[in-house]
Length: 114
Image (cartoon, rainbow, N blue to C red; front, side, top):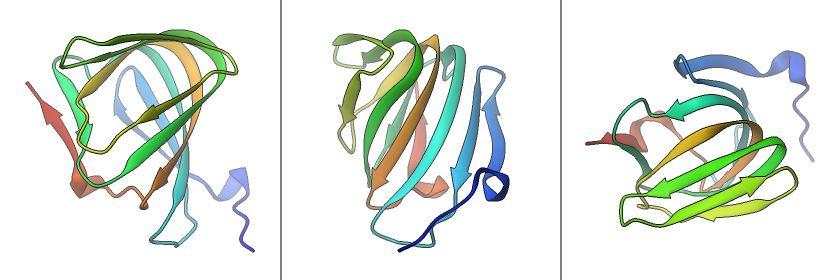
């Protein structure tokens, strides 16, 4: 069993609209982060995780996820969304979400797409 306390999470911002707290589990099969999104992320285009699936649990707030193929998903507090690996999307909302990823997320596989 492993536990990571909030005070041991690693905070970073990947834009003015997205702040993330990574919880380092040191496990290649799964990891988890919490993100606060306040607007559109990425600022333009789409993002894509090439190697991992993300399971999104909306802790608070609401918004939309839009895919490059035209799908729009509206979400609100307590909803769950599964983002498949390789799926290009962007966020637009004001929310806090928990994001476990399998296999574990790592920065090099996260891509921004026009």
